[in-house]
Amino acid sequence: MAAPSRTLRTLWAAVAAAVALSCIIAARARETPPPPRLAAAASLAGVLEPWSSEHNVDLHLSATGVLVSQLLAGARADAVLLADHAWLAPLIEAGWCEPHTAVPVASNTLVLAGPKLQVSASGSTPSGPSSPTNPWDPTLRLAIGDPNLVPAGRYARQALTALGRWKTLAPNLLRAPDASAAAAWVRTGAADAAVLYATDTTPGRGLTVWQHLDSATHDRIDYLVVPAAGSPRGARLAAVLQTQATAAAFAAHGFGPASAVKPSPVGHQPRPTANLTGPVVRSLACAAAATALCFLPAVGLAAALTRRRQTCTNRAPPVWRRGLRTAIEALVLLPVVVPPVVCGWAVLKLLGPHTLGQWSPVFTWQGAAIAQAVVALPFWVVALRAGLQQIDPAVLDAARCDGATPRGVLWRVALPLATPALLAGGLLSFARALGEFGATIVVAGNIAGHTRTVPLALYTALQTPGAEPQAAALVALAVALGCATTGAAVLLRGATLHRG
Image 1: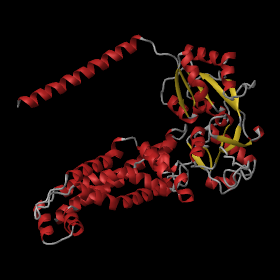
Image 2 (image 1 turned 90 degrees about the vertical axis):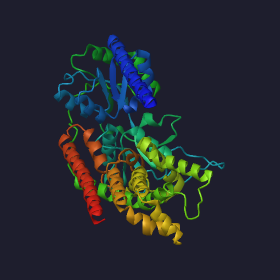
Image 3 (image 1 turned 90 degrees about the horizontal axis):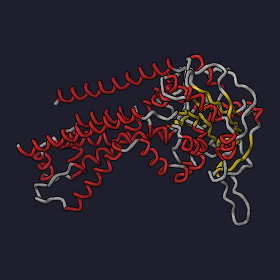
Image 4 (image 1 turned 30 degrees about the vertical axis):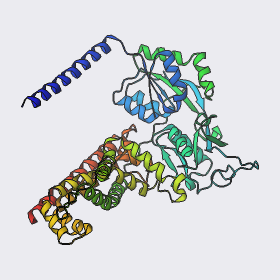
């Protein structure tokens, strides 16, 4: 008993040391006042990151709609740099800032951009989706920012409507969480073209401008600095952002001069309509497809990881096979410990347009199902393996000694005996696929009416000011679906055990 006691004392000592270190760090943090914090639109990252380091400012970057939601929820910021006038109204109504304190500091324009063209040795450019000769082809995969979430998407919708192309292009549009994501989709081949800010296509970004969109087709794109009400540090931040040195930094990154017109808090961001049926049906369909994709791999992997010595032949597996089994087990468990976004990135690289061309499932519900299957597979493998390990080895050895093949032992003896674990693992995988978010948004995007599942719809609602009722309804739906799935798992397991 001495060794366990020493281990326990060592564990408690490590916990105490960690708590003490945390207290010391927290005490020192309180002694040093935090620097001023600026929340800013993600499209300003290139210019504001070096600027914030120079001026000792904490910088928080995100989509404008996300920033407004976070500020209204109580996030700390001394000033915010918005990319749209329409988001002023929610801040003023909530009392976060004073009316008529927003000041423009820079401007931007919209362009239609595609991947960087590769010029052949003869000097000609390739035709097809990469060619600027057909920039508005309805068959192109055109990406824009989500109009309900980011200003870049709202400006793009205004421009496409004014050009008379919204109705023909809208059904196939890929809606990105922000303009930077849309640009990344073009660079990786997930989209053929995108409506972007001109500053997203500066040299070195791997994009080619196909067309400059007339500024008369959309609202003026101004970046507004808004100090928080009653915040002297916010007022000082706003003053620094209006200096000539800051204006020169913006101009060096391709931004235009600030507008001389005083912005007004008009044009409320439209409240999204609560269409819950589509995301629910899509979530159930994708989760069911992901579970079906997991079945055979889960059975095969669980059986491979639980094979024992065959006593009728008295043969032990060789060392290399045991090592291979350990490596496979680590690989199977990898999606549990890495961020789901990593799994999505891997699927995007393996099954993206650069690999499969027109057969790529990226930005489709099939792609969402594949991404969910990758994340959900380990849960079924672990549950089924635990069930197979509970089977009496003598039963399996008797079947082998009677001449049953390994496949026959698995399907006719082991799996029927492990039915409770098989059902529980399947329902657990279904539940995990139902709640999957990170890998899904990377592989399938967040396309309303096509790939938007309940988690993605909830994410969109939570990041959109004014969508609290929709968010509450989606939370209730997510909880109800989770309870139904876990309840079914308990009932099926109980019924199976009762029959046994």
